Amino acid sequence: MPSPGRWRQLCERLGGAREEEPEMDAYVFLRDVSEATLQVLGIMVAEDEDKDTGKIRAVATTTGEYDAVCFVEGQSVKELQEIVLDRIRNKAGAVFTETAVAVEVPQPIQGALVVPNAPKRTLVMMQEALVLVKTDVGHTVDAFWAFADRDTGLTGLLGQAVITGEYDILVELGAESYSQLSEILLSVGTYAGNPPTPARRDAPPVGRRSWRASARSSPSCSPT
Image 1 (tube, rainbow, N blue to C red):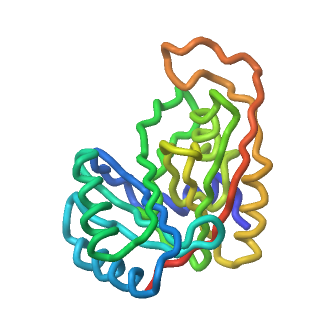
Image 2: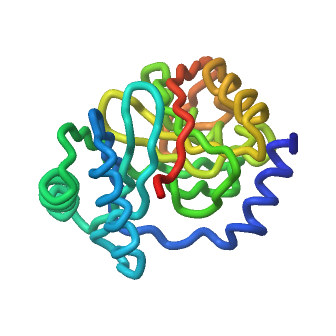
């Protein structure tokens, strides 16, 4: 398995420069979803492919707490709500939706030189998983940048976002085989660190306070 630093170099070569993202990203988690609903959502993704915003970027089925998740882009909360209520719930027929909106993260002074993309924006791997992460109170930003660190971060990181709601971070991971993916997933649930610098230049020193991240992992795939 490649080292975290080697993985970042691979991502840069295959994914190219980090594309400019829209104003808002949202992740709509679905429960009790039918095959018919997934088929309609897949058609919507294809129809939205050439749109710049106001679209469903991708749909992935998952295991565990949720059956699927839609990756949505919009310029405002109102636009995101319209996509969820009119398209995902009304037209596609989703019964249960739970929406988490991505929030902006202040950049660190040093380290994590590769700014991660949002989930489902660049690479597609043979095996993929989505991980919902909870962190110790006050350390969500520390965990976000620790996961993305070029040298010591998570191997297989394809994308991540700090989100609103019950969980703190949505992480997308990938690997060439399920055994490699399993090894990566196990490392997320026990991840811990000591943030070396404050995340913002105007933030007070954080000292040597440690933090931990607990995770709920779900192997994912895009429905055909």
